[in-house]
View 1 (cartoon, each protein chain N blue to C red):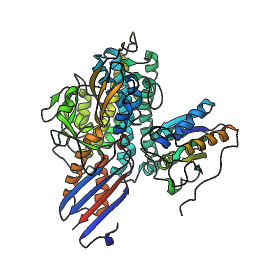
View 2: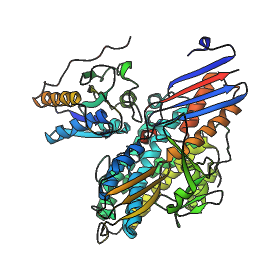
View 3: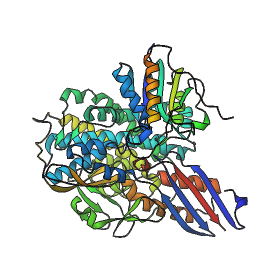
View 4: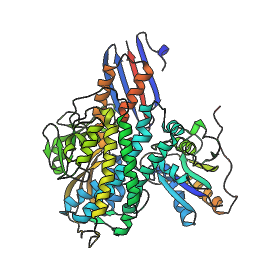
Length: 436
Length: 157
Protein backbone atom coordinates (compact mmCIF):
# COMPACT_ATOMS: atom_id res chain seq x y z
CA UNK A 1 0.00 0.00 0.00
CA UNK A 2 1.46 3.37 -0.88
CA UNK A 3 1.20 6.51 1.22
CA UNK A 4 -1.72 7.97 -0.72
CA UNK A 5 -3.94 5.01 0.06
CA UNK A 6 -3.70 5.53 3.82
CA UNK A 7 -5.76 7.91 5.94
CA UNK A 8 -4.21 11.28 6.70
CA UNK A 9 -1.38 11.22 9.22
CA UNK A 10 -0.63 7.61 8.49
CA UNK A 11 2.50 6.50 6.75
CA UNK A 12 3.13 2.98 5.61
CA UNK A 13 6.53 1.67 4.75
CA UNK A 14 6.50 -1.57 2.89
CA UNK A 15 9.48 -3.57 1.76
CA UNK A 16 9.19 -6.65 -0.38
CA UNK A 17 10.86 -9.85 0.56
CA UNK A 18 13.67 -9.39 2.99
CA UNK A 19 16.71 -10.85 1.35
CA UNK A 20 19.71 -12.49 2.95
CA UNK A 21 17.84 -14.20 5.71
CA UNK A 22 17.75 -17.96 5.44
CA UNK A 23 14.19 -18.91 4.69
CA UNK A 24 11.06 -16.91 4.67
CA UNK A 25 8.77 -15.09 7.05
CA UNK A 26 7.18 -11.71 7.67
CA UNK A 27 7.83 -8.71 9.86
CA UNK A 28 5.35 -5.96 10.66
CA UNK A 29 6.25 -2.73 12.48
CA UNK A 30 3.65 -0.08 13.40
CA UNK A 31 4.78 3.35 14.58
CA UNK A 32 2.39 6.00 15.88
CA UNK A 33 3.88 9.43 16.47
CA UNK A 34 7.05 8.82 18.42
CA UNK A 35 5.97 5.47 19.79
CA UNK A 36 6.53 2.03 18.38
CA UNK A 37 3.12 0.50 18.88
CA UNK A 38 3.67 -2.97 17.57
CA UNK A 39 6.39 -5.27 16.28
CA UNK A 40 5.46 -8.71 14.99
CA UNK A 41 7.78 -11.31 13.54
CA UNK A 42 5.86 -14.08 11.90
CA UNK A 43 7.49 -17.35 10.92
CA UNK A 44 6.42 -20.93 10.46
CA UNK A 45 8.12 -23.89 11.97
CA UNK A 46 8.96 -27.07 10.11
CA UNK A 47 10.59 -28.51 13.23
CA UNK A 48 6.99 -29.04 14.32
CA UNK A 49 6.50 -31.14 11.19
CA UNK A 50 9.61 -33.10 12.06
CA UNK A 51 8.44 -33.69 15.62
CA UNK A 52 5.38 -35.45 14.20
CA UNK A 53 7.36 -37.11 11.41
CA UNK A 54 9.75 -38.71 13.91
CA UNK A 55 7.07 -40.47 15.93
CA UNK A 56 7.15 -44.19 15.22
CA UNK A 57 10.64 -44.05 13.67
CA UNK A 58 13.50 -46.10 15.04
CA UNK A 59 15.80 -44.07 17.30
CA UNK A 60 18.78 -44.88 15.06
CA UNK A 61 17.18 -42.94 12.19
CA UNK A 62 16.76 -39.75 14.20
CA UNK A 63 20.18 -38.12 13.64
CA UNK A 64 19.96 -38.48 9.85
CA UNK A 65 16.33 -37.34 9.67
CA UNK A 66 16.83 -34.28 11.85
CA UNK A 67 19.96 -33.36 9.87
CA UNK A 68 17.59 -32.63 7.01
CA UNK A 69 15.82 -29.85 8.92
CA UNK A 70 18.53 -27.37 8.03
CA UNK A 71 20.89 -27.44 5.09
CA UNK A 72 23.24 -25.00 6.82
CA UNK A 73 23.52 -26.57 10.27
CA UNK A 74 22.83 -30.33 9.90
CA UNK A 75 25.63 -31.21 12.33
CA UNK A 76 23.93 -29.25 15.11
CA UNK A 77 20.78 -31.31 14.63
CA UNK A 78 22.77 -34.53 14.60
CA UNK A 79 24.70 -33.64 17.73
CA UNK A 80 21.73 -32.49 19.79
CA UNK A 81 19.67 -35.52 18.76
CA UNK A 82 22.51 -37.98 19.43
CA UNK A 83 23.16 -36.49 22.85
CA UNK A 84 19.46 -36.61 23.76
CA UNK A 85 19.22 -40.27 22.75
CA UNK A 86 22.51 -41.12 24.43
CA UNK A 87 21.30 -39.45 27.63
CA UNK A 88 18.16 -41.58 27.42
CA UNK A 89 20.23 -44.74 27.00
CA UNK A 90 22.77 -43.84 29.68
CA UNK A 91 25.65 -43.60 27.21
CA UNK A 92 28.54 -41.20 27.55
CA UNK A 93 30.54 -40.66 24.38
CA UNK A 94 33.99 -39.47 25.42
CA UNK A 95 37.64 -39.56 24.41
CA UNK A 96 38.49 -39.36 20.73
CA UNK A 97 34.90 -39.95 19.65
CA UNK A 98 33.88 -36.81 21.49
CA UNK A 99 36.89 -34.98 20.04
CA UNK A 100 35.87 -36.04 16.52
CA UNK A 101 32.37 -34.73 17.10
CA UNK A 102 33.82 -31.41 18.22
CA UNK A 103 36.02 -31.39 15.12
CA UNK A 104 33.02 -32.04 12.88
CA UNK A 105 31.14 -29.24 14.62
CA UNK A 106 34.10 -26.87 14.04
CA UNK A 107 33.61 -27.49 10.32
CA UNK A 108 29.99 -26.42 10.59
CA UNK A 109 30.82 -23.28 12.56
CA UNK A 110 33.40 -22.30 9.93
CA UNK A 111 31.06 -22.78 6.97
CA UNK A 112 27.96 -21.31 8.61
CA UNK A 113 29.65 -18.27 10.15
CA UNK A 114 31.58 -17.50 6.96
CA UNK A 115 28.40 -17.72 4.94
CA UNK A 116 26.69 -15.28 7.23
CA UNK A 117 29.59 -12.86 7.64
CA UNK A 118 30.41 -12.43 3.96
CA UNK A 119 27.30 -13.30 1.99
CA UNK A 120 24.46 -12.21 4.26
CA UNK A 121 25.69 -9.61 6.74
CA UNK A 122 28.71 -7.79 5.28
CA UNK A 123 26.84 -6.22 2.33
CA UNK A 124 24.75 -4.28 4.91
CA UNK A 125 27.81 -2.66 6.43
CA UNK A 126 29.47 -1.85 3.12
CA UNK A 127 26.35 -0.44 1.51
CA UNK A 128 25.92 -3.13 -1.11
CA UNK A 129 22.47 -4.46 -1.95
CA UNK A 130 23.76 -8.02 -1.99
CA UNK A 131 26.81 -10.27 -2.14
CA UNK A 132 26.83 -10.17 -5.94
CA UNK A 133 27.65 -6.47 -5.97
CA UNK A 134 30.23 -7.04 -3.28
CA UNK A 135 31.82 -9.74 -5.44
CA UNK A 136 31.84 -7.46 -8.48
CA UNK A 137 33.80 -4.82 -6.56
CA UNK A 138 35.90 -7.05 -4.33
CA UNK A 139 36.22 -10.43 -6.07
CA UNK A 140 39.41 -11.44 -4.28
CA UNK A 141 37.86 -10.89 -0.86
CA UNK A 142 34.84 -13.00 -1.83
CA UNK A 143 37.04 -15.72 -3.31
CA UNK A 144 38.97 -15.92 -0.03
CA UNK A 145 35.68 -16.10 1.84
CA UNK A 146 34.58 -19.00 -0.35
CA UNK A 147 37.91 -20.71 0.32
CA UNK A 148 37.40 -20.34 4.08
CA UNK A 149 33.85 -21.60 3.89
CA UNK A 150 34.85 -24.51 1.67
CA UNK A 151 37.42 -25.66 4.22
CA UNK A 152 34.62 -25.92 6.78
CA UNK A 153 32.59 -27.90 4.27
CA UNK A 154 35.52 -30.23 3.61
CA UNK A 155 35.83 -31.01 7.31
CA UNK A 156 32.12 -31.79 7.36
CA UNK A 157 32.47 -34.01 4.31
CA UNK A 158 35.46 -35.84 5.76
CA UNK A 159 33.80 -36.62 9.08
CA UNK A 160 30.16 -36.51 8.04
CA UNK A 161 30.56 -38.92 5.17
CA UNK A 162 29.29 -36.80 2.29
CA UNK A 163 28.93 -33.29 0.93
CA UNK A 164 25.54 -32.41 2.32
CA UNK A 165 23.26 -33.99 4.91
CA UNK A 166 26.01 -35.91 6.72
CA UNK A 167 25.30 -39.57 7.38
CA UNK A 168 28.33 -40.80 9.34
CA UNK A 169 27.16 -39.78 12.81
CA UNK A 170 25.23 -42.32 14.86
CA UNK A 171 23.91 -42.72 18.37
CA UNK A 172 26.96 -43.89 20.33
CA UNK A 173 29.62 -42.41 18.03
CA UNK A 174 30.27 -42.72 14.29
CA UNK A 175 29.75 -45.39 11.64
CA UNK A 176 33.36 -44.94 10.58
CA UNK A 177 36.21 -42.96 12.09
CA UNK A 178 38.94 -41.40 9.93
CA UNK A 179 42.57 -42.47 9.80
CA UNK A 180 45.00 -39.90 11.16
CA UNK A 181 46.44 -39.42 7.67
CA UNK A 182 42.99 -38.49 6.34
CA UNK A 183 42.71 -35.71 8.90
CA UNK A 184 46.19 -34.45 8.26
CA UNK A 185 45.41 -34.23 4.55
CA UNK A 186 43.24 -31.16 5.24
CA UNK A 187 45.66 -29.62 7.72
CA UNK A 188 47.30 -27.30 5.19
CA UNK A 189 43.92 -26.03 4.04
CA UNK A 190 42.93 -25.37 7.64
CA UNK A 191 46.09 -23.40 8.23
CA UNK A 192 45.24 -21.25 5.21
CA UNK A 193 41.69 -20.96 6.50
CA UNK A 194 43.05 -19.75 9.83
CA UNK A 195 44.89 -16.94 8.02
CA UNK A 196 41.73 -15.91 6.18
CA UNK A 197 39.77 -16.05 9.43
CA UNK A 198 42.30 -13.75 11.08
CA UNK A 199 42.07 -11.33 8.15
CA UNK A 200 38.31 -11.47 8.56
CA UNK A 201 38.45 -10.52 12.25
CA UNK A 202 40.59 -7.47 11.51
CA UNK A 203 38.49 -6.46 8.52
CA UNK A 204 35.03 -6.67 10.12
CA UNK A 205 36.22 -5.04 13.34
CA UNK A 206 36.84 -1.88 11.29
CA UNK A 207 33.24 -1.56 10.11
CA UNK A 208 30.93 1.16 11.40
CA UNK A 209 28.40 -0.13 13.90
CA UNK A 210 25.09 1.54 14.74
CA UNK A 211 24.70 2.21 18.44
CA UNK A 212 22.42 -0.27 20.19
CA UNK A 213 23.23 -1.93 23.49
CA UNK A 214 20.19 -3.66 24.96
CA UNK A 215 20.40 -5.13 28.44
CA UNK A 216 20.20 -8.68 27.16
CA UNK A 217 19.63 -11.85 29.08
CA UNK A 218 22.29 -14.02 27.47
CA UNK A 219 21.85 -17.81 27.46
CA UNK A 220 24.43 -20.32 26.28
CA UNK A 221 26.08 -23.56 27.17
CA UNK A 222 29.05 -23.60 29.50
CA UNK A 223 31.39 -26.47 28.73
CA UNK A 224 33.99 -27.66 31.20
CA UNK A 225 37.35 -26.11 30.29
CA UNK A 226 36.51 -25.19 26.69
CA UNK A 227 34.57 -22.63 24.70
CA UNK A 228 31.15 -24.28 24.34
CA UNK A 229 30.33 -26.12 21.14
CA UNK A 230 29.25 -29.67 21.81
CA UNK A 231 27.63 -29.81 25.22
CA UNK A 232 27.58 -28.36 28.73
CA UNK A 233 25.31 -26.83 31.33
CA UNK A 234 22.87 -24.09 30.36
CA UNK A 235 23.86 -20.77 31.93
CA UNK A 236 22.82 -17.12 31.78
CA UNK A 237 24.17 -13.74 32.92
CA UNK A 238 21.26 -13.62 35.42
CA UNK A 239 22.49 -16.56 37.46
CA UNK A 240 20.87 -19.47 35.65
CA UNK A 241 23.01 -22.61 35.81
CA UNK A 242 21.09 -25.81 35.06
CA UNK A 243 21.66 -29.18 33.45
CA UNK A 244 20.17 -29.67 29.98
CA UNK A 245 17.60 -32.06 31.47
CA UNK A 246 16.04 -29.09 33.33
CA UNK A 247 15.57 -26.95 30.17
CA UNK A 248 11.79 -27.30 30.01
CA UNK A 249 11.38 -26.37 33.68
CA UNK A 250 12.90 -22.96 33.01
CA UNK A 251 12.17 -22.20 29.37
CA UNK A 252 8.61 -21.97 28.16
CA UNK A 253 7.22 -21.92 24.66
CA UNK A 254 4.05 -19.97 24.03
CA UNK A 255 1.74 -19.48 21.09
CA UNK A 256 1.33 -15.87 20.00
CA UNK A 257 -1.67 -14.82 17.93
CA UNK A 258 0.27 -13.44 14.96
CA UNK A 259 2.59 -16.38 14.41
CA UNK A 260 2.49 -20.08 13.77
CA UNK A 261 5.78 -20.29 15.59
CA UNK A 262 6.16 -20.83 19.29
CA UNK A 263 7.97 -18.04 21.13
CA UNK A 264 10.39 -19.21 23.79
CA UNK A 265 10.88 -17.28 27.02
CA UNK A 266 12.97 -17.74 30.13
CA UNK A 267 10.67 -17.30 33.11
CA UNK A 268 8.40 -15.22 30.90
CA UNK A 269 11.12 -12.91 29.55
CA UNK A 270 12.84 -12.82 26.15
CA UNK A 271 16.45 -13.93 25.99
CA UNK A 272 19.30 -14.07 23.51
CA UNK A 273 21.14 -17.13 22.24
CA UNK A 274 23.94 -17.30 19.66
CA UNK A 275 27.45 -15.92 19.20
CA UNK A 276 26.96 -12.80 21.31
CA UNK A 277 25.59 -14.84 24.23
CA UNK A 278 28.32 -17.47 23.92
CA UNK A 279 31.02 -14.82 23.80
CA UNK A 280 29.78 -12.87 26.80
CA UNK A 281 29.30 -15.96 28.95
CA UNK A 282 32.49 -17.75 27.91
CA UNK A 283 35.06 -15.07 27.11
CA UNK A 284 37.32 -16.50 29.82
CA UNK A 285 37.37 -19.84 27.99
CA UNK A 286 38.74 -18.38 24.77
CA UNK A 287 42.47 -19.07 24.40
CA UNK A 288 44.59 -16.15 25.65
CA UNK A 289 45.79 -15.09 22.16
CA UNK A 290 42.19 -14.80 21.01
CA UNK A 291 41.27 -12.74 24.06
CA UNK A 292 44.18 -10.43 23.22
CA UNK A 293 43.05 -10.21 19.61
CA UNK A 294 39.50 -9.39 20.73
CA UNK A 295 40.86 -6.55 22.87
CA UNK A 296 43.13 -5.35 20.07
CA UNK A 297 40.18 -5.04 17.67
CA UNK A 298 38.01 -3.23 20.19
CA UNK A 299 35.97 -5.94 21.86
CA UNK A 300 36.17 -6.33 25.60
CA UNK A 301 34.96 -9.24 27.69
CA UNK A 302 31.45 -7.81 27.32
CA UNK A 303 29.86 -6.94 23.98
CA UNK A 304 26.18 -6.01 23.95
CA UNK A 305 25.90 -4.39 20.54
CA UNK A 306 24.11 -6.89 18.28
CA UNK A 307 25.58 -5.24 15.19
CA UNK A 308 29.01 -6.29 16.46
CA UNK A 309 27.90 -9.90 16.34
CA UNK A 310 29.67 -9.95 12.97
CA UNK A 311 32.98 -9.44 14.81
CA UNK A 312 32.11 -12.12 17.36
CA UNK A 313 31.27 -14.53 14.54
CA UNK A 314 34.64 -13.79 12.98
CA UNK A 315 36.41 -14.50 16.27
CA UNK A 316 34.45 -17.74 16.66
CA UNK A 317 35.39 -18.70 13.11
CA UNK A 318 39.06 -18.17 13.92
CA UNK A 319 38.58 -20.15 17.15
CA UNK A 320 36.98 -23.01 15.19
CA UNK A 321 39.96 -23.11 12.81
CA UNK A 322 42.46 -23.18 15.68
CA UNK A 323 40.43 -25.69 17.66
CA UNK A 324 40.17 -27.95 14.60
CA UNK A 325 43.94 -27.83 14.14
CA UNK A 326 44.46 -28.67 17.81
CA UNK A 327 42.03 -31.60 17.69
CA UNK A 328 43.66 -32.95 14.53
CA UNK A 329 47.09 -32.74 16.08
CA UNK A 330 45.97 -34.69 19.17
CA UNK A 331 43.91 -37.26 17.29
CA UNK A 332 44.52 -40.95 17.82
CA UNK A 333 42.31 -43.45 16.11
CA UNK A 334 39.91 -44.97 18.67
CA UNK A 335 39.56 -48.74 19.10
CA UNK A 336 35.94 -48.72 17.97
CA UNK A 337 33.95 -46.15 15.98
CA UNK A 338 31.04 -46.26 18.42
CA UNK A 339 29.80 -47.55 21.74
CA UNK A 340 27.43 -50.52 21.79
CA UNK A 341 23.82 -49.34 21.88
CA UNK A 342 20.83 -51.30 23.21
CA UNK A 343 17.42 -49.63 23.03
CA UNK A 344 15.15 -49.36 26.03
CA UNK A 345 12.10 -47.40 27.10
CA UNK A 346 13.53 -44.05 28.19
CA UNK A 347 13.50 -40.28 27.79
CA UNK A 348 16.52 -38.01 27.30
CA UNK A 349 17.43 -34.42 26.47
CA UNK A 350 20.41 -33.00 24.58
CA UNK A 351 21.65 -29.54 23.71
CA UNK A 352 24.52 -28.21 21.64
CA UNK A 353 25.68 -24.84 20.36
CA UNK A 354 24.44 -24.54 16.79
CA UNK A 355 26.09 -21.60 14.99
CA UNK A 356 22.98 -19.53 15.83
CA UNK A 357 22.71 -20.64 19.46
CA UNK A 358 21.56 -23.46 21.67
CA UNK A 359 19.57 -26.21 19.97
CA UNK A 360 17.53 -28.34 22.38
CA UNK A 361 16.16 -31.82 21.61
CA UNK A 362 14.20 -34.25 23.78
CA UNK A 363 13.07 -37.75 22.80
CA UNK A 364 11.00 -40.45 24.39
CA UNK A 365 11.24 -43.98 23.03
CA UNK A 366 9.65 -47.33 23.83
CA UNK A 367 11.40 -50.61 24.65
CA UNK A 368 11.89 -51.38 20.91
CA UNK A 369 13.58 -48.02 20.42
CA UNK A 370 10.67 -46.47 18.52
CA UNK A 371 10.21 -42.74 19.08
CA UNK A 372 6.98 -41.93 20.94
CA UNK A 373 7.59 -38.20 21.45
CA UNK A 374 10.01 -35.63 20.04
CA UNK A 375 10.61 -32.03 20.97
CA UNK A 376 12.95 -29.68 19.08
CA UNK A 377 13.59 -26.06 20.09
CA UNK A 378 15.80 -24.35 17.47
CA UNK A 379 17.77 -21.19 18.24
CA UNK A 380 15.80 -18.96 15.90
CA UNK A 381 12.56 -19.71 17.78
CA UNK A 382 14.32 -18.74 20.98
CA UNK A 383 15.58 -15.46 19.52
CA UNK A 384 12.34 -14.43 17.86
CA UNK A 385 11.02 -12.44 20.79
CA UNK A 386 14.41 -10.79 21.26
CA UNK A 387 14.52 -9.76 17.59
CA UNK A 388 11.17 -8.05 18.11
CA UNK A 389 12.53 -6.30 21.21
CA UNK A 390 15.65 -5.12 19.36
CA UNK A 391 13.53 -3.73 16.56
CA UNK A 392 11.25 -1.98 19.01
CA UNK A 393 14.26 -0.29 20.66
CA UNK A 394 16.06 0.47 17.44
CA UNK A 395 13.07 1.99 15.66
CA UNK A 396 12.12 4.05 18.74
CA UNK A 397 15.63 5.49 18.93
CA UNK A 398 15.95 6.22 15.20
CA UNK A 399 12.58 7.57 14.12
CA UNK A 400 14.36 10.58 12.64
CA UNK A 401 16.07 8.44 10.00
CA UNK A 402 14.78 8.72 6.45
CA UNK A 403 12.33 5.97 5.62
CA UNK A 404 14.58 3.92 3.33
CA UNK A 405 17.46 3.99 5.79
CA UNK A 406 15.27 3.07 8.75
CA UNK A 407 13.87 0.19 6.78
CA UNK A 408 17.31 -0.98 5.75
CA UNK A 409 18.48 -0.77 9.37
CA UNK A 410 15.49 -2.89 10.43
CA UNK A 411 16.50 -5.53 7.94
CA UNK A 412 20.06 -5.35 9.22
CA UNK A 413 18.80 -5.69 12.80
CA UNK A 414 17.08 -8.93 11.84
CA UNK A 415 20.18 -10.19 10.05
CA UNK A 416 22.25 -9.57 13.21
CA UNK A 417 20.67 -12.75 14.46
CA UNK A 418 21.51 -14.81 11.38
CA UNK A 419 17.99 -16.18 11.66
CA UNK A 420 17.80 -19.63 10.19
CA UNK A 421 14.22 -19.43 9.15
CA UNK A 422 14.76 -22.19 6.62
CA UNK A 423 14.68 -24.38 9.71
CA UNK A 424 11.31 -22.81 9.70
CA UNK A 425 9.72 -21.21 6.75
CA UNK A 426 9.54 -19.34 3.43
CA UNK A 427 9.99 -15.70 2.48
CA UNK A 428 10.47 -12.99 5.03
CA UNK A 429 8.39 -9.97 4.14
CA UNK A 430 8.96 -6.71 5.96
CA UNK A 431 6.07 -4.30 6.39
CA UNK A 432 6.17 -1.06 8.35
CA UNK A 433 3.21 1.16 9.11
CA UNK A 434 3.92 4.64 10.41
CA UNK A 435 1.06 6.71 11.81
CA UNK A 436 1.96 10.29 12.65
CA UNK B 1 31.96 -32.90 -23.55
CA UNK B 2 30.07 -34.22 -20.53
CA UNK B 3 28.14 -31.72 -18.46
CA UNK B 4 28.33 -31.45 -14.71
CA UNK B 5 24.88 -31.73 -13.16
CA UNK B 6 24.16 -29.58 -10.10
CA UNK B 7 20.97 -30.41 -8.25
CA UNK B 8 19.24 -28.00 -5.89
CA UNK B 9 16.39 -28.54 -3.48
CA UNK B 10 15.16 -30.10 -0.27
CA UNK B 11 13.50 -33.52 -0.44
CA UNK B 12 11.54 -32.72 2.72
CA UNK B 13 9.74 -29.88 0.95
CA UNK B 14 7.75 -32.08 -1.44
CA UNK B 15 8.23 -30.92 -5.05
CA UNK B 16 11.27 -28.87 -4.01
CA UNK B 17 12.94 -32.29 -3.89
CA UNK B 18 12.72 -32.85 -7.64
CA UNK B 19 16.36 -31.77 -8.11
CA UNK B 20 17.78 -34.36 -5.67
CA UNK B 21 15.39 -36.97 -7.12
CA UNK B 22 16.73 -36.38 -10.63
CA UNK B 23 20.30 -36.25 -9.29
CA UNK B 24 19.96 -39.73 -7.85
CA UNK B 25 18.80 -41.20 -11.18
CA UNK B 26 21.49 -39.42 -13.20
CA UNK B 27 24.25 -40.44 -10.81
CA UNK B 28 23.17 -44.05 -11.16
CA UNK B 29 23.42 -43.57 -14.92
CA UNK B 30 27.03 -42.45 -14.55
CA UNK B 31 26.83 -38.67 -14.92
CA UNK B 32 28.90 -36.34 -12.76
CA UNK B 33 26.38 -35.05 -10.24
CA UNK B 34 26.75 -32.65 -7.32
CA UNK B 35 23.92 -32.17 -4.85
CA UNK B 36 23.93 -28.59 -3.69
CA UNK B 37 21.14 -28.75 -1.13
CA UNK B 38 20.06 -25.46 0.42
CA UNK B 39 23.39 -23.63 0.47
CA UNK B 40 23.84 -22.06 -2.94
CA UNK B 41 27.40 -20.92 -2.33
CA UNK B 42 28.05 -24.60 -3.06
CA UNK B 43 26.59 -23.98 -6.48
CA UNK B 44 29.26 -21.33 -7.07
CA UNK B 45 31.95 -23.81 -6.05
CA UNK B 46 30.35 -26.55 -8.14
CA UNK B 47 30.25 -24.41 -11.26
CA UNK B 48 33.94 -23.61 -11.02
CA UNK B 49 36.00 -25.68 -13.39
CA UNK B 50 33.09 -27.18 -15.33
CA UNK B 51 33.12 -26.92 -19.14
CA UNK B 52 29.36 -27.18 -19.19
CA UNK B 53 26.89 -27.13 -16.31
CA UNK B 54 23.29 -28.17 -15.97
CA UNK B 55 21.47 -26.83 -12.94
CA UNK B 56 18.36 -28.79 -11.98
CA UNK B 57 15.90 -27.06 -9.68
CA UNK B 58 12.22 -26.88 -8.77
CA UNK B 59 10.42 -23.77 -9.96
CA UNK B 60 7.25 -22.03 -8.83
CA UNK B 61 6.23 -19.52 -11.49
CA UNK B 62 2.52 -20.16 -11.92
CA UNK B 63 2.86 -22.46 -14.93
CA UNK B 64 1.14 -25.88 -14.83
CA UNK B 65 2.96 -28.40 -12.57
CA UNK B 66 5.44 -30.45 -14.52
CA UNK B 67 6.26 -27.65 -16.99
CA UNK B 68 9.92 -27.74 -17.90
CA UNK B 69 11.68 -24.38 -18.07
CA UNK B 70 14.96 -24.31 -19.96
CA UNK B 71 17.08 -21.23 -19.42
CA UNK B 72 20.54 -20.59 -20.82
CA UNK B 73 22.30 -18.36 -18.35
CA UNK B 74 25.91 -18.45 -19.54
CA UNK B 75 25.59 -14.97 -21.04
CA UNK B 76 22.38 -13.56 -19.59
CA UNK B 77 20.94 -13.51 -16.07
CA UNK B 78 17.84 -15.45 -15.12
CA UNK B 79 14.57 -13.75 -16.08
CA UNK B 80 13.34 -11.54 -13.25
CA UNK B 81 10.17 -13.63 -13.04
CA UNK B 82 12.20 -16.44 -11.54
CA UNK B 83 14.57 -14.37 -9.45
CA UNK B 84 13.02 -14.41 -6.03
CA UNK B 85 11.30 -17.75 -5.82
CA UNK B 86 13.80 -19.51 -3.65
CA UNK B 87 13.78 -20.71 -0.08
CA UNK B 88 17.55 -21.07 -0.19
CA UNK B 89 20.14 -18.90 1.48
CA UNK B 90 21.14 -17.11 -1.68
CA UNK B 91 18.60 -17.22 -4.47
CA UNK B 92 19.50 -19.20 -7.57
CA UNK B 93 19.80 -15.95 -9.48
CA UNK B 94 22.17 -14.48 -6.89
CA UNK B 95 24.32 -17.60 -6.88
CA UNK B 96 24.61 -17.60 -10.68
CA UNK B 97 25.46 -13.91 -10.74
CA UNK B 98 27.98 -14.43 -7.95
CA UNK B 99 29.63 -17.11 -10.08
CA UNK B 100 29.62 -14.74 -13.05
CA UNK B 101 31.17 -11.92 -10.99
CA UNK B 102 33.91 -14.28 -9.83
CA UNK B 103 34.56 -15.51 -13.37
CA UNK B 104 33.66 -19.14 -12.73
CA UNK B 105 30.33 -19.41 -14.56
CA UNK B 106 30.72 -21.75 -17.56
CA UNK B 107 29.66 -20.15 -20.83
CA UNK B 108 27.38 -23.10 -21.39
CA UNK B 109 25.25 -23.15 -18.25
CA UNK B 110 21.66 -24.28 -18.51
CA UNK B 111 19.04 -24.15 -15.78
CA UNK B 112 16.44 -26.89 -16.06
CA UNK B 113 13.55 -25.85 -13.83
CA UNK B 114 10.66 -28.19 -13.22
CA UNK B 115 7.48 -26.47 -12.17
CA UNK B 116 6.28 -27.84 -8.84
CA UNK B 117 2.86 -27.85 -7.26
CA UNK B 118 3.44 -28.42 -3.54
CA UNK B 119 6.27 -26.91 -1.49
CA UNK B 120 5.06 -27.49 2.05
CA UNK B 121 6.75 -29.77 4.56
CA UNK B 122 6.57 -33.40 3.52
CA UNK B 123 8.11 -36.05 1.31
CA UNK B 124 7.38 -37.23 -2.22
CA UNK B 125 6.78 -35.59 -5.58
CA UNK B 126 3.41 -34.69 -7.08
CA UNK B 127 2.49 -37.23 -9.81
CA UNK B 128 2.75 -34.70 -12.65
CA UNK B 129 6.14 -33.49 -11.39
CA UNK B 130 7.44 -37.02 -11.16
CA UNK B 131 6.23 -37.80 -14.68
CA UNK B 132 7.94 -34.68 -15.97
CA UNK B 133 11.13 -35.60 -14.12
CA UNK B 134 11.10 -39.09 -15.63
CA UNK B 135 10.59 -37.64 -19.11
CA UNK B 136 13.45 -35.22 -18.53
CA UNK B 137 15.77 -38.03 -17.46
CA UNK B 138 14.81 -40.13 -20.49
CA UNK B 139 15.65 -37.28 -22.84
CA UNK B 140 18.97 -36.62 -21.09
CA UNK B 141 19.98 -40.26 -21.21
CA UNK B 142 18.96 -40.67 -24.86
CA UNK B 143 22.34 -39.19 -25.71
CA UNK B 144 24.22 -35.98 -26.46
CA UNK B 145 22.10 -33.34 -28.07
CA UNK B 146 18.87 -34.72 -26.68
CA UNK B 147 18.61 -32.39 -23.73
CA UNK B 148 15.33 -30.45 -23.82
CA UNK B 149 15.55 -26.98 -25.29
CA UNK B 150 12.00 -25.66 -25.11
CA UNK B 151 9.52 -24.10 -22.70
CA UNK B 152 11.62 -21.18 -21.60
CA UNK B 153 9.20 -18.68 -20.05
CA UNK B 154 8.86 -15.15 -21.38
CA UNK B 155 11.36 -12.70 -20.02
CA UNK B 156 10.20 -9.68 -18.11
CA UNK B 157 10.47 -6.48 -20.04
